[in-house]
Amino acid sequence: AQAALDAGWEFMAHCYEQAAIHKIPDQRAMIAQTIDVLTRFTGRVPSGWLGPGRGQTYETLEHLAQTGFKWFGDWVLDDQPVTVRTKHGPIVSIPYSTELNDIGIMLTSHQDSDAMYTRVRDAFDQMHEETARGSVRILAFGVHPYISGVAHRIKYFEAMIRYMKEREGTVFWTGEQIHAWYRSA
Image (cartoon, rainbow, N blue to C red; front, side):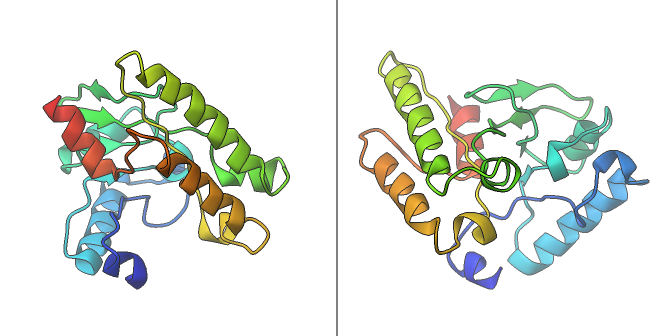
């Protein structure tokens, strides 16, 4: 965590303890605890939330907006952000994909070591082609160091990043950066 902080990475909230959110008796208290821990460690209040297992109840977005979150990544909805209205103001849904996540590809489906690279490359090519018609696309992929960072997969992860970096018009943004761009556009 310290290395990520030193590198300037964005820390998004992801629940204090990994648990199904509908089983947490006091979501508001858990969200407050999560904010407190991250703020004390990073020196910054987190602006984004990704619930454990992308889970929500009908109250979750209300709690997130009320406590100041600007964006969340729980909805596997689209490849463009959307604004969601809550009683406590708007919150932005930033795209996320369950099919481009190394947990599902590698651990659940037991795919070959290069499967994530192939899948992300194919999605990227399609979205990059669509942007040529004047529409922005957000390609979200989920990686975990203990999965994509292991010796037999890391070269495919590095190749995936290199492949996307080589294409003109591609940027790598944090959730905060995507949110800021979307709100200003």
